[in-house]
Length: 365
Image (tube, rainbow, N blue to C red):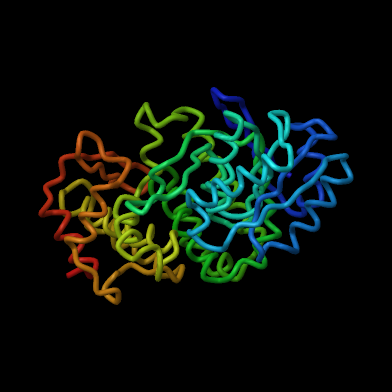
């Protein structure tokens, strides 16, 4: 097992990465909560086999274990589900010393983490990440949120987990589409910070897609180290560095919003968004013309989409949704754009016509 330390003003925590960690959850969680406390496992029904192992491990360490199931999909990140979980905690008598154990991907950790941040003005929670996307990205850093009808992640908090556990073995059962979608975020890390990781993905994508756990563990470790370093230095996105993690996301959130979060999973939307951001950077002379092509070749090799043509979307509708993005400042959208593989910059005041051009380039009308 490898561990990575994450600094937080609200309490430092560690990320545990390895294989066969689910059976050790009780021992790890015992370092955060005292035996005898109540723990609410928050998860989804498709993860039931893992919940038995986790519950047993926690029970053996003397914890009182309860389970709360969320619906599948993005619908779980709603105000209704937030209140349903909060009332479940309340009716079972959860106090401030008790906690939540989120088992799942980004949807589960977002909802469970936000509930932890507001229940009794804040209780601790643990993230057990079961998707590649969660293991390299969403389980780390303390961003929690729910969606509003106007857009994604518009209500939330910075509330870091007390512990993150990433068992790479669970990725064996990850559907191929979810694996590929998660790799979109891994490509992001290569572009924004680590050219060696980008090259590793180019060289080993076939083994990764075949679920070679040795290769995947290296990917998880590399991605988690990058995310941990960035959020340790800029936890609340006030120094500018954490903004680079949004590479491709402004476009992606606009596309997802217009599609009502149907037809594309998040990592797929991010892949398309990165393609758009790279091409925008090339059009503006910020990077070479070769960079977007190199990035696109890697995305395609990982079975990720790079176009929205089949969805028949209007550029004006995507732009309107993008303007609700929580990352805009003084009414202006900010775009993370590459200078070269491994280095990006945050640009604002991009002419709207350039943005429209990129949307049409990607297949919008």
